[in-house]
Length: 387
Image 1 (cartoon, rainbow, N blue to C red):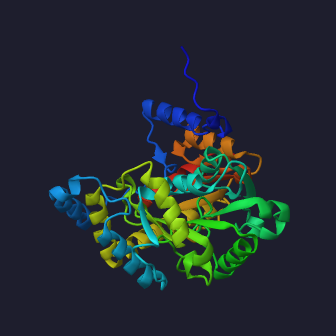
Image 2: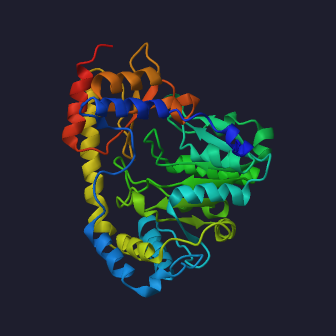
């Protein structure tokens, strides 16, 4: 007998990457050397000091039991110390910080904690698909804000109908931005906070890439006067410390929002493995020796790849942050057509921009998660194609 899934899945768009995966497998099976610029997963291993910390913590029997709902106290205190040093923001480890199983889980559970059926959420597009998916699962209605080159990849709050703003419950933000690589300015965050206060809207700022910037430091929205009144910010160890598989992150900011997320999480999970929290604590303690070299490496990769593409006539704005390159497709091609041609003829995996929302049409996203020499080789392969 059939077992149909819940109706909420009907709202999700089709899985656009299935055909890409199919063609990638075909290229590999045919013996081709595939350069995978599609996945946002660091190719560098987790630093040894973090691995050693996990090993030591795993040998401690006290870490083998359920984790506390609100996380290991030492981890929360280290997050507070990091935030004070990095952003000059004071956070109460007891009420304004809550560890999450990576930032993705926090984003999804946040929607269930605060979005009621019929609530509008303001979703930037192109975007990380979790924003729209979480909204739908919670019964909300996403209202999209286009991020385009013309508006410098910032949402234009003046274009939002005041009636929609009045009904809106959440404003999703993501800076540094995936997939465009854009950094937020102080002026933009100030405008976002003022907009949220005026219309009594919660800001959920996905800050997973704040520690991967090239053209000036990335800001926290909690640095902005009044930011903590309206915002919850999600951070992650995944990209910062090459810990994507470890699933360690945190939410911080407004204590009512922290408490609401915590109440949701206490009903659906049992926290991060305590040994992983201890390792993440060590990661933050060793920030100064781990993160700057990684940022320098990605900057060099960015320059090699983007300058190479420019030299052969492609239109690309080098990312100000993140390890994503948001690249204009050749004239006469769609995002999907460009992606498929790159796979079939150059054996290079990218992601079509429309997979992140309609305003992403006309772009492809490429990651910098392969060695510099492979990025140079990718440029050379692209140069040989006939468009």
